[in-house]
Amino acid sequence: MIGGPKAPIDRGSVQIQPAEAPIGIARRKKRKMNKKYAELLKDPRWQKKRLEIFQRENFECEWCGSKDNPLTVHHDYYRYGKTPWEYPDTSLHCLCEECHGIVTKWKKEIKKHTEELLIDNLTQLLGYIVGLKLSNYPDESFDVYDYEMAQGVGDCFQMTADQVLYAKHLNKGQIDGWMLVYVRKQPKARRKNGKSAS
Image 1 (spheres, one colour):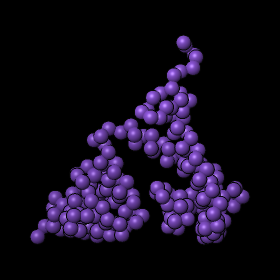
Image 2 (cartoon, rainbow, N blue to C red; image 1 turned 90 degrees about the horizontal axis):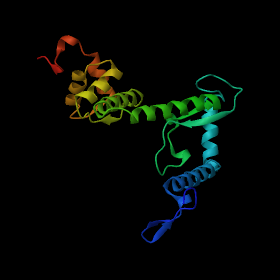
Image 3 (spheres, rainbow, N blue to C red; image 1 turned 45 degrees about the vertical axis):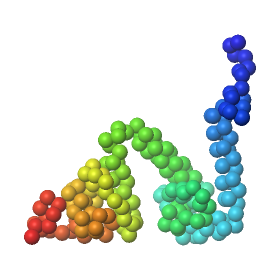
């Protein structure tokens, strides 16, 4: 019967009614998570951290400088199981609601376009992302999987892929921001194809 009620979906011992099909379940889980997150934002530990971030920025949006628009604290990233106040201050930003909306929109756009990339472009993009992270957090270290990833890292540090691979060699198989800066500052005469010319 078209447009009429559908039979329940049998999933072993659990029957899922059509209204509870996977999309409905995902929506309910998201609402439940959002409700839990909203409760966490009322926690005194978050309120204290939030106030500290606002005070650090003199109650001013870090991007547009507004003191008149309502402010919010933006998390650079989220990790499963972490509460809002467990993130380092360096990953928390005081933004007005308008700028926060722009950042959120950009993150969604990045995710959308990343999902549409060809497999061949993924390691180069990963390298670029790692390069951006190392430029902000130079003490962290990463492995470079292949030449394309080295190209991505190199794009961030204005280096060639060979220079990035040389930095990896000098750093015993990993790269960090400090080693990349060190290799980038070396005179070109001392390098040949990413190796020291001795």
